[in-house]
Image (tube, rainbow, N blue to C red; front, top):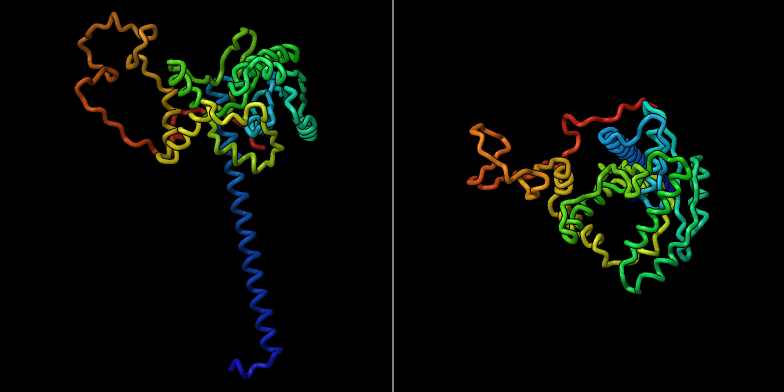
Length: 330
């Protein structure tokens, strides 16, 4: 039968097949684009929910606050500003935002990127120019870690700027993984069970520092940066130091999460569920004056029982009893 077909008939069949194939590809692209759009929308809702939850849980932002949002040019601070702007539009309280960047005069730093981005965004901003790079390079010997001195200089400058701008809160872009890394760094290298709090009074006693992304995992911020196409500025001053202890701890945590999904969520929840009587700090618990009461105590020790730990659930999010910020629909 095929042999009986003319050349024109064969051409028609080929054209029809090609059209069907093109339609199928077009339909697949549309479906894939719709799926990506849905996933992006879910991610945005999750980020807003988690940032809003942290704000409420720790009373980070109050009526009339002027929040100084520290923007470095990295994915985390971009995302923090982005989400706070979204929440500002729908929050049941009134507060203002001002973005602040500290230009530390690193060689090759693209000075135009942040002003251009913030201007297009329409958010008030301030660029503080201070040559801390030269100070750090002059004081710290070659090959030594630069972060400690750089952090102290940056902190002092930002505290001063907050006062000059009349800011009532200073918002930093640290996320859940940063907090876990800090906990392990303090335990491994400072012999302290100490983490990175979501809200604290600054060491000069004059500022309230908040971390609105305390509940947000880094992987969500990485994806959001891709979705929003933030103009990322790499940190050439400290980003090239591959042997930093924080990087090593971060790699350790990522490996744990890869092998045991849900472990980071479980560890982070542990930071909010402290049992001082089952640690060893006599300043936090009066071990010396412990007496038997004769009354059952669910928190009492079960000294002869074998430890039994169940696997953590895949996700501990959405637990009952956790408050969520009341937001008006857009």
